[in-house]
Length: 260
Ligand code: HEC
View (cartoon, rainbow, N blue to C red):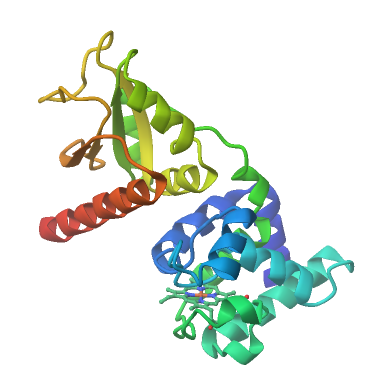
């Protein structure tokens, strides 16, 4: 009966987004949402995980294996969902690398997952999220720039930061970053998860914040209430930019805990 309810909610997409929130809260500190296969291969097969320093399998790896190695992938869909659900239920209670469906070549870089204590609702929403996860929604995506006011509203609603990308028409480093870093699928997935992005061309647009940066590119992170948390001038390579995102996130966490 529980399953039936879940399938219904899954079909309506309700738990897809709720599951994403639970995932971010409980799992995202170790499991990244999406990394392209080519990069995973490079990372694990040639660079001993030193390229990405992953702490756990990424969700695209995980979901692929769950769907193909648990139960009967070609059987009845609802039945398959139940099979995956019971695998997960057991795995969260008794994580054990011997039971993992992850590739041994990849698994060797990881510790064993800690036991996950989830209440029924969290558990169901996570299962629904994993089952509905579609790597295609992360591939070939472009950054979705928002106008500042709607970005602020969205950030508040989704408890994300606003990231303002200050650029200028003749800034070649800005263009280079847009081409090489801000269009990278892993970077986009990470930005999607943590921030709402605003782009301001300083030559033609008014800055929405005090202390407009004079240098471009500059990245300014605001908390959901619009308070500035972090600002970083300069053009960056992908690895450094991902690090900057992490840094911004940890500043938001510190700020939040001070608030309480
Ligand atoms: C502290 C880090 C950490 C957290 C938090 C965490 N995991 Fe994991 N997880 C791991 C590691 C490391 C592995 C790989 C080793 C293993 O299977 O134990 C793993 C493995 C898994 C596997 C098995 C994958 C396979 O291929 O067999 C699943 C499924 C999974 N995690 C789901 C989740 C979900 C869902 C959450 C959130 C509720 C979560 N994990 C939270 C670290 C974590």
